[in-house]
Length: 310
Image 1 (tube, helix red, strand yellow):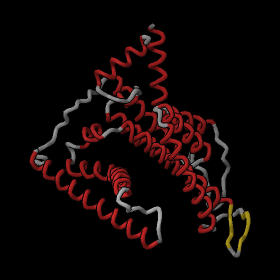
Image 2 (cartoon, rainbow, N blue to C red):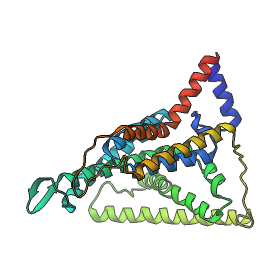
Image 3 (cartoon, rainbow, N blue to C red):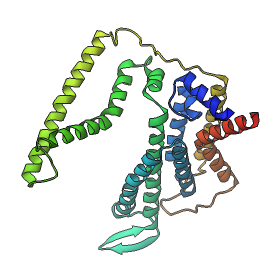
Image 4 (cartoon, rainbow, N blue to C red):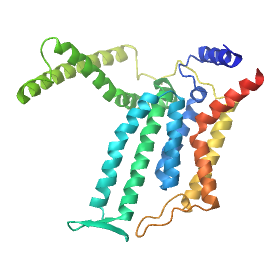
């Protein structure tokens, strides 16, 4: 193992983190600020060049974090929703000056098609952002940020975020066990499969309620909520965190100022505008991509640093 690998391994053992990304070793405040800004960018800059560039950048960020399977699954799920939005928006929204076609009295306009395409791209970016968020922003980091402000709301948020995947995992286990007893939803008549599905849901709900009661009793016995909760894992706010956070705030403030001036926002209604970007528009695009590529920049800088130190 080279010097770079040994140093990274020592850093991971010292910090107790599983991730290999330098970005994940930043203070939770910086990580949370990055994802808030990335989400805001996907909703503020409604322009095809901006959205396509952000989409490619978020794919690269997820691939860097070795989320190939989750990224591919998210893109496959987002593709259906994107097609649905692109098709349904022109049917439900007939505003616009450029008529493409008319079907049974329904007018399809270029403005409606463009708006649906941009909204679909924005949705795909949001889904990819949350894929990266779920890996970098762990439960411990989320508790560290908000537990002192509102312990009950923080706990409720964490429970809600893990509710769906936990139920899916439990339902899969219950279905595999009940299949050995002949209870399955894949074969038989519609009535038999419906009856089997209701039995599986009954077992799932009972199991979840019992587990919830045991968790509540355990939390009460440990005195949760009796006083302000402290985090057992401390995250130091280093000088690097300060520089990164200051850069994020300054860069995003400048980008939002450009957006307020109409830069990076394509005029769609009442008439479709031009996608041409001026010099300030390209500058804003570069700033947006630099902020979105923060994990890539940190990883590249760390690699160059240790390569030059060898």
